[in-house]
Amino acid sequence: MAVLSNTITAHVTHNRERGLYAPFDVLVFSNEVGASKPDEAIYRHTLGLLGLTERPEAAFFVDDLEENVVAARKLGLHGIVFRDANQLTNDLRRLGVEV
Image (cartoon, rainbow, N blue to C red):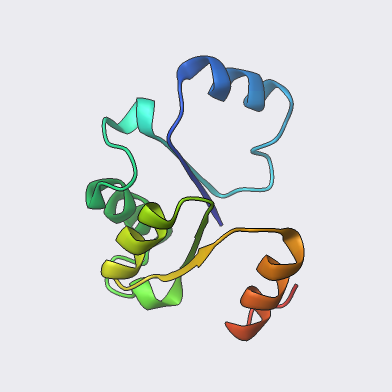
């Protein structure tokens, strides 16, 4: 599971200190990799770290911005535009994700 975030150093530091990233295996921050959503390079970088470069369809991407989800879908990921927790839960279940 990965975090892929357009962010700045201060936010990353604050969130690390609070332990918000602890559940995630992969952390990708725009300020650290020099690319940001919706640039396909940051999605490809994240897929590589997840070992899914050749299987993007095995991943799903959630974002509150449609343009970021559209970019992920163009690369073959399942994309979900976040609106609220109930909608996200239902969309994930439709993908076969146990929630």
